[in-house]
Length: 309
Length: 309
Image 1 (cartoon, helix red, strand yellow):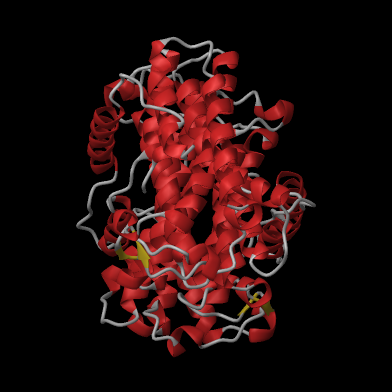
Image 2 (spheres, rainbow over the protein chains, first blue to last red):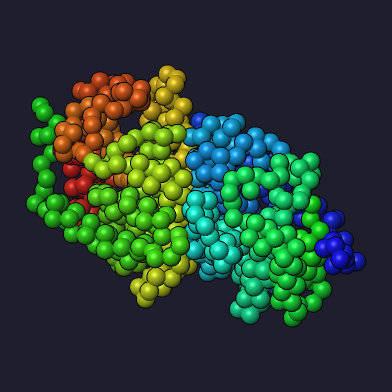
């Protein structure tokens, strides 16, 4: 049975939902991270080059969707949603650098350092990371003032933890080291949980916390995020083996060429697909206690099994 | 009249004061940024290599001194003091990278990328920046819980602003661009206010805000910080011309070799010394409204005129 048929999308129209949410996030990013005409304009322009490079806005959309489940308002969580995309973008810019993955293209366009040079690319990443925390902490108009400081501080702590040694940066350093040594599946999973999973998990948790969710709701959404993050990374690995370079905007087989330890390399394609299905099922199962408001999260999880890019 | 005689240190023993404060900051940094035994240990070790490289801890000491003026407790501001040193250290690691200033030595030791390689050095900088915000936002034992969330959030906002496009990163990109074009004194001053001044100013403001200072006190301490920051940068430029390489742990003349636009290059040594004295006097003048509790800040400002490293 081909993986594509295992789940059918529900009556809920995911495509329209994602397009509408993505548009809102793009508008908010434009507002929160505008172009600059000052002497520092080069680094702002470089950061915006990568921030507006056609990303799917998965993390902001998950953050907003978690707020919907927890009964929060879109306005109240939008700064956090945008901060997540800024941190995600910084990590892509730094990962692409010559000293790291040395990638020339991302999403069909030259990578940041290919356009702006290494020095400005490093600073553009630094800037996005810095301003992400600034965005969470500064006042942003009326709506945001309704969120108590305690919750916003908790969001800062969640974002820092997901991005630090126990999260994304820890995952990236394990990834770098795994290129030159043999690693087992447990290490690869541990690496992915940190490198990709932690920020996805934080997206859900920040949406919940900023909406004043009770601890059980936050915990359930976080668990959904952990499984979704793994399913996302596993299907990403599969696309690098089986994807269509035209649709993806990058060449396939690049993981294998770099001796990256991927799921397909360690498990074979068939068992990798099974593992992806398992995590999607587990993700959906953690949403059992929630009503139709969680349908977008259910649909997003199932969509991973049919994604083309 | 040689610059060294213009001010004499007061009865207050600055040397003992700085040594004691530095020891406290070092202890707190060890507690807040401990070594790791996990898979991410390399990047933590690299970050600690630069964090414990014998820094003067100027920014943490200024933060603690501002808290003393504002009537705050040392315990309450220590996480912020350490966060400032972590952000300062991240900026040094990234500035030293081959793509930036390409420096091989700092404080008499090989720079981070010379020991750990470029990839890990970039990540170590990213880590220090990330964990600095985490430190401000996370609970750190009993003392810290006494600081209201609103004040801590304000400290996050101050740190982000001082480190971002309007602060350190903006200053660094202006610095990079000034190497290949002619710039005037106004631009050099603007660059320094951002690159060095902003974080020094933030050190004072964060200490004040976390101690619940009134806006006038915070503003006065911030103004002191702006003048101190400029005086610090100007005397730094002077040391690069006139300093003793043995005492400084780095070679002199490196600014000129890199075509850096410095104060001595633009103003000459004599007028540069005058400018440094002016800023020190202005810094001390902003402290007029404060009693003896501000003596350490007065002494630190005057000390810049006799510094050897």
